[in-house]
Image 1 (cartoon, rainbow, N blue to C red):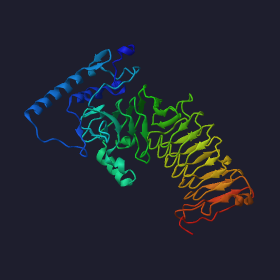
Image 2 (image 1 turned 135 degrees about the horizontal axis):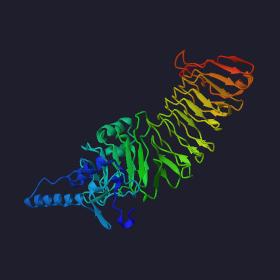
Image 3 (image 1 turned 180 degrees about the vertical axis):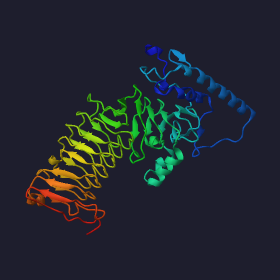
Image 4 (image 1 turned 45 degrees about the vertical axis):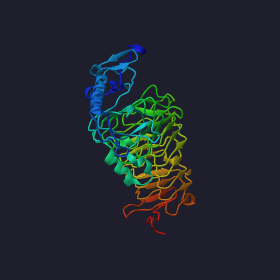
Length: 432
């Protein structure tokens, strides 16, 4: 291994070698074009300015062939993907991959990335400078300032400013703010490298059933706010797993105590994952619309947010492992759910807790059950076994529409108590 002063590796160390050469070639290309929103070009071109432009192209081409480091240099084609133990660093000032679109920010001193533009490359490097200004922010188009305008604006941004070609995204060390909606706008993205200065990441449009394909997440070791471990992005100060992917292994060394909002949402290849006992909280939608097939909650879990497993349509088995609350929409639309271990310890089922669990044939509750919310068993066809009398069951606090249905075939079959059984009276959702 080379010592620190001899490290010549770049962010391309961990990227498939077939993309390295072509990605680095783009440093020799013309600078990224200006955003249509800030572009104010001078159409008067003199012979002197034309000559200067030629010189600029030559000047940009030379650094692309030999990028200088603190105490050495390297030729990009000599960097190999198998050098996986080297410290990752992004190159010094560069113009990034060709075709990307940037604009000058309101302060006039810094720039932002706004679109993948005409870029059709698989490996994309975000520029460190644009028009002489450091690139400090990554957003997706002008909709940033209109984010409350509804899904149409956001979906337009996804289709107009994203890219279906991008597979590998490398974020330069100058970038400080990163809107990870960008990854949602690249439906075929597989790996993301986060630079050293990213101190704020937004999670905004990271849920749904689109089916993310990310298999690799990495953060610069020099980043003070975030770290990466086991293909997870972790916020250091709060010990929150900010973002995971289908190949993630959640660290069990105490570095993760919270699985964050939307952390694994939409992970199409995430069929199973072990949640270590050091995790005490799982925030809302953490695994929503993923491909989970089974899950065991950690033994030390203290808080579970709403909709944690919503839309997990392949989820068949859940072990509550002593946890007693079913928050709102926890298992909503888990149509394949067949087994809920530990359900006899449940104290409360909030609104829509098991709605659309059409594959749930039976579930058992103990006398500890005290409250059932609105639509808790909406369109659920299970047989409920209750470890108490009919009188005990009737004493449970229930919303008047705790058992609603979509049609005559979507109703609870019966309630089986210790002293008898009966078919509960269901209601249409809209019935007064």
